[in-house]
Amino acid sequence: MLKLDNVTISYKNVPTVQNFNLDMKEGQIVSLVGESGSGKTTVIRAVLGLLAGGGKVTEGSITFEGEDLLSYTPEQWRKLRGSDISMIFQDSGAMMNPTRKVGKVFTEYILTHEKISKKEAWSKGIAMLERMRLPSPDNIMESYPFQLSGGMRQRVGIAMGMTYQPKLLLADEPTSALDVTTQAQIVRQMMKLRDDYHTGIIVVTHNLGVAAYMSDYIVVMKNGKMEDQGTREYILKESKNEYTRKLLEAVPSRGGERYV
Ligand SMILES: Nc1ncnc2c1ncn2[C@@H]1O[C@H](COP(=O)(O)OP(=O)(O)OP(=O)(O)O)[C@@H](O)[C@H]1O
Image (tube, rainbow, N blue to C red; front, side, top):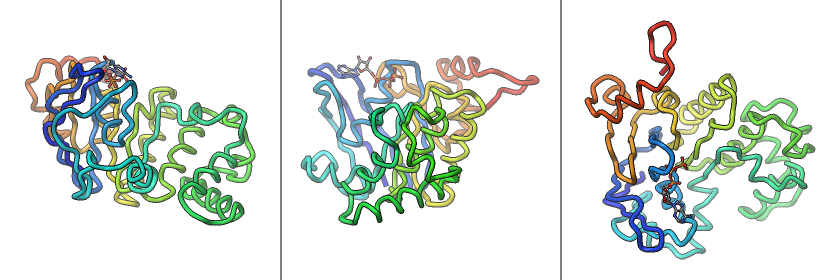
């Protein structure tokens, strides 16, 4: 479904991510882990054509459903975003304009994707919130983002991202701003999306515990390079890579068992 082949990404001609490879199947959950600055966000932004600060893919190829994304025009990228590939952020709610109600933001988002009436867009927003099991969707639509908890905002963000049932969801530190209980809810909700809609998910996280809990495949990054990679089982139990072991040791343990 998504293939990154020997991708190098540079900011102002300085290679930041080098020789990145990934061959992702439909419905797979892949995590990119590694400490801050290792290049995780840069990789997923490149997949959506959203590199900031003059970032550019300077080598390699990115193929999605057989299409060469790097040859896409800005118009093609726009069409892809939100429909075939969606992205959610650390605090999706904070991305929303605080002076506008959730319902207004959500309906405008829908209206940029399809030509329907405002009323129909509103109903569609409500239906999505219901599908994501958010309580009182009408109230949520009438709320300002700051009136919702962090976990609710994140679930609204996921609901928006899932409106067009994308094949791929990119999640940048989706649980990092949340307390542990809410983190677990969001993680389970994302896993359910994969089960219900067969959505492939790439999760960027510095938390190997989260990655280990939800992923089929884990890529460990360090200084812009792939330091280690493999199935969840391999990374957790077999890898002898020192850096991976160090990250694993940092995951809190509970009753002698690592909380992963
Ligand atoms: N807009 C930018 N302009 C210039 N350089 C950038 C920019 N964004 C990122 N970089 C460079 O890319 C490196 C990797 O950043 P990136 O955000 O991809 O890492 P990360 O692993 O996602 O870290 P974090 O968890 O802190 O987001 C940074 O150390 C920085 O040198």
